[in-house]
Length: 112
Length: 347
Image (cartoon, rainbow over the protein chains, first blue to last red):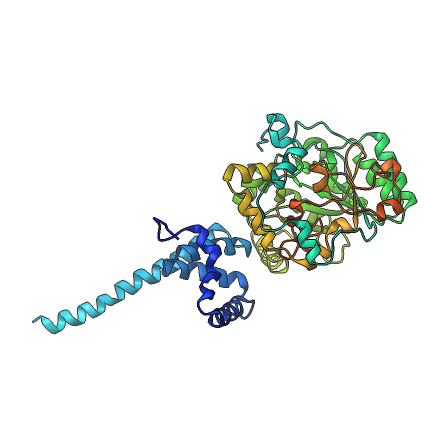
């Protein structure tokens, strides 16, 4: 299929096409995925918010669309969803910053 | 509060039920509602008896909510006549129908609202008032909460979310604060309080083109948040899917979302929800006395299929019981996910 875009929103609905190459693996993935998101020690609403945050962290536009909808359909609101995105952003920012300690360690090794 | 013009006032093409039906019929959906019913062994959909007589007493409302399937508003003038009210009350008296469900518009704006409630309660019928809450803040309608409590009417109150921004975005600026004031007054009268017997249910529909949350999980969130933020209590939260009819259909059209939303409903078709849809237990009466399978068919000008009993004056339980329920693509709205009805989720 020709396309001048790497990401097309219509492709989200075609996620299952990846199963054509390895149906058994796809079925295992689906079963595991569904079990992960089922109501458990965490509510389905909480899991959708975590998924939204992780979607931003892994920068997957399909996941962002899917879990924005999922969060709304689990009763979350814009404020809660935005805070979840900030959690992802804070961890990403913090993950960069904490590597500054590595920089400081190396500075100490090189310096006088 | 702001009140936007209705589709009717705008002379909008979608003000007509036939135009809405045509638009929905032309959508290239992955399957028809009738095919979904056939696959579930439910085609043709048949009524299971009439437990609820739902009167749509008129289209006048003090609000013009963005999702309203009635296209109700202050500029609507359709009102059930005294003659039709009398016939409905006679049917209620002579039949075994146990519940009278009064809707609109804002049903309290009907000049005979009190008479209808008094007559039905005198007959020993359960009475439901589908209340938009803000009507009770209008000067001439401050009597309503006390009147409802006196007659032990079950109140099903619309409140799409427990925060003002979402509620006002859908229902109009200032609606949330006025609704909370009304809920507090109902609580003070005993509504929603344990062991009072005065039932206050909240009806929540999504503020946008997505499915409602799972009803019991949402009820927990709402109970916690409304109590914490506003000291409001209620009995049950009922979730309902936005129907692709009238003003919500117009909203979908303006957003270019009609096909995506309908296809979402199609993909979420649930046979268990289809088996329990409210049209199997409810008979809907329009302001002019015409009979419909539900309030949604009413707004699409899709009356009951039984030719000999299309008006309340010709009420005939046998003919109505044998009818096939009129269906269309909009019916996917009541059968998606956990289902959706005037009583909330059904599956």
